[in-house]
Length: 239
Ligand SMILES: NC(=O)c1ccc[n+]([C@@H]2O[C@H](COP(=O)([O-])OP(=O)(O)OC[C@H]3O[C@@H](n4cnc5c(N)ncnc54)[C@H](OP(=O)(O)O)[C@@H]3O)[C@@H](O)[C@H]2O)c1
Image (cartoon, rainbow, N blue to C red; front, side):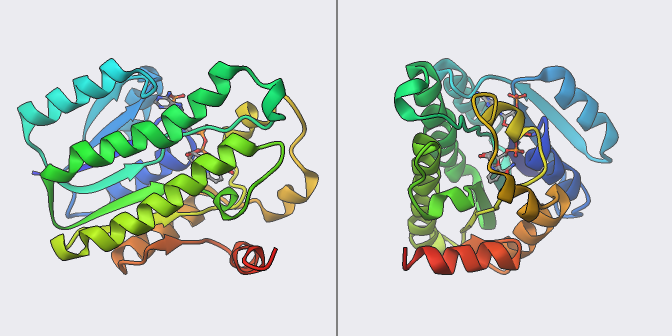
């Protein structure tokens, strides 16, 4: 049984990964991970693929242990891991709560690293890992300091891991979207307004995910959707 594991599967980019991966004939079952069980079940019912709903908070260490035990028991053959769960809070560092700031690191970095580590022994030759980073990873961002730093971690970790795993024929792609039209902004901009210029660069989830899957199939280490975000990456090398 060829399994795909997708975190952040209850909405936005992760939900779209579930929909597009479900159309791939080589995947037999999708393990969907996020906190909102009802949302996961609703989405699972709409795809024509066997799904396993795993409702859990990835910020809680005991839940990661539970996942480890599940993997040991079921020994799935993993063809694809998509680490998409994550969030950002746009606020000056000193004005946010410590819980919020550390939470971003726990979900965006620690759970992503743990899941990658735990899934690796079960990954097939030719398997793919897709790590959802962000264009925010390209340079430090005042007012979004911990989030952009957490995504720089994801980008650098993924690129290095891609090199390490090539000999095992496992390929890692870091996805670096600019603004994407999802619920992300309901959480990130509660404290302040999203910069209005971002609205002009807003992409759709289906566009970002289609490009990410195509880039992963081509064994690319980075996936960037849209000319403006490519240009941003190029310019940030000089800023
Ligand atoms: N939207 C953008 O503009 C944008 C741009 C670049 C990168 N990204 C990245 O894309 C990824 C997906 O975000 P999105 O835009 O699709 O936003 P979203 O719709 O808010 O999705 C976030 C997902 O992460 C899950 N999640 C959050 N905290 C979690 C936790 N503690 N435990 C388990 N699951 C958790 C959420 O599920 P539950 O709430 O059900 O737990 C949800 O499924 C994130 O990593 C984000 O940083 C987004």
